[in-house]
Structures are given as structure tokens and as C-alpha cells.
Length: 322
Image (tube, rainbow, N blue to C red; front, side, top):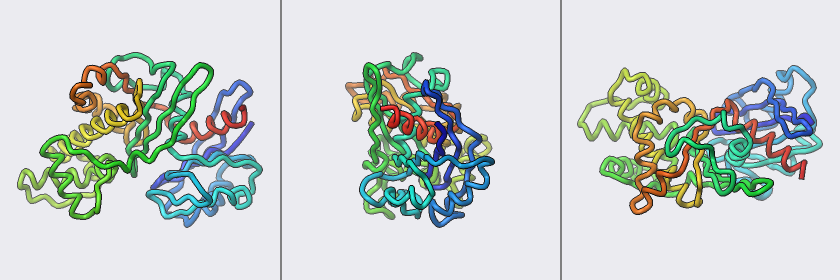
């Protein structure tokens, strides 16, 4: 069975032709990545993708969207496109379409990739549990959150909008970040801090605390300078980001009753080595009376290069196998 796997986020729309064997093995073709800002709709992006596919485009698709997938209309969280799932088959010339949340797709990927496609981040260096709940989180343009529950003979994915829960400050620097963001936003959600663009407010807050006269930089510059170590304030902002990511990862594990956690997303992959040497693990465990329990949870980073596309194809295969 061949299909088109699509992963639409706040910044990019990714497409790949996927093949699913009778045994459930999934093979992805070369991904084609388009900027969402270059297209006014999914339909025009599809029309751009189709001639680049290098083959006849299959008549089936699994489309992962960065937003809550419910009702007749889907408005993407960090993207101006509006999707009407019931009209996609007609608009795109398809026979079968599966529409799902983008982080539900990532959770499907985490449930299906082999153990060698995970990198250890924190907790015991053991495989993810074979049964029970696994939290899946990923910082990018926003913050994606989902979880899946494994049971004998299968698993179930639950999409969430967990990136929009309130940001909880842990120390005085968090308090200062929160105070800065409250001046601009009616409420401060977790993804205002724990996302790629969130590094801008972290960096600016640290500059104020040190009474530095530092021009505000864009997020790309802060990440580059911080990751390379060429700028000490940018490096401190990256470390602070890792602390906050550790805190929220632990919060989601508690809320989900998880036996393990998977960190995903392009940003998570890019900062994987920094995460391992940062205070991420300490903040993940820092849950008061539950610190010992948190220390016993394996935390992994998924290293598959396209978990959204792989997971969309896995979700399609799972639905059509049942």
C-alpha cells in the first residue's frame, strides 16, 4: 500500500510518499519540505509538491496537522491555513484521507520505531516500557504534547493541546521570565517559553537581570550563538531553555501517569547533546515528594529524521489494518 504522508507545522509542510508492507513495515521516500509562508493553503502546497514527487502520486494520504483535529474545520495553531477535513479528498483528488493531530503522529512514530532509534537523555538507560503510558513532547515553532498507552497486542494514541497549559515558574529567573511575558499576553502558556521562539524572551530576561545593554536578537541568532558557545548570554539562555523543558517534561509525565517520556521535534534533535549535559534531567526529577519516582522514568529522544511523516503513515496503516 502506498500513500502520501504529510506533516504540517507552523513553519514547514513536509510531504513524502510512504510504502506500507503487509507486515506493517513502513518505508518513506525522500521528504519534500515547503515553507507554509510560501503557500496560502494546503491545496496550493499539494499542487507544488505533486510534480516534485518524481512519480504518480498515490490516491491515499495521511495528513498530520499542528492543531486540534475536531469538527468540520481545523485552524492550525501557528499557521494561517484553515483545513476542512471533509473536503480534502475532493480538493486533493484522493480516495482515502486520514487527518490527525501532528503530535498524535509523532506518538505513533514513538510507538513503532525500534529501540535503536532512541537516544537516552535521563533516568535509567533502559528501553521504554512495553506496557503503560508514554508521554511525548516536542518543542518547535510551538510545543507539541501527546501520549500513547501500550497494552498487550497494541497501543492507543491520545492527542492533546498540552502546550497551552499555564507556565509554572520554579525559581526567581522563571519568575522574571513570566513577569516579562505577562506584560504582552493575557495568560502565559508553556509554549511561550518552551518553544524555539521562546528563547528570545528568555535571552532578553537574562540581559535585564544582569543589567546588560544588549540588543534583542532573533531566535535563530540566539540558538546559533548559544549552541556554539560564542556568546555567554546566549549560552545561558539555551541552558535556561533546557531547564524549562525538563520541568514541563516532568509535569506531563506526572499528569499522564507515564512510565517513560519521549522528546521529539526538530529542535529537540538539534539540541540533544546540550540537553544531555544541561540541567534538564535534574529539573525533570525536581518534583518534591515524587523525585525518586521521577528518577526511575526513562527519558528518550527519538532520532528518526521524520517522525511526523513516519507516524502519519503508521497511523494510516493501523487504521486500515483494523
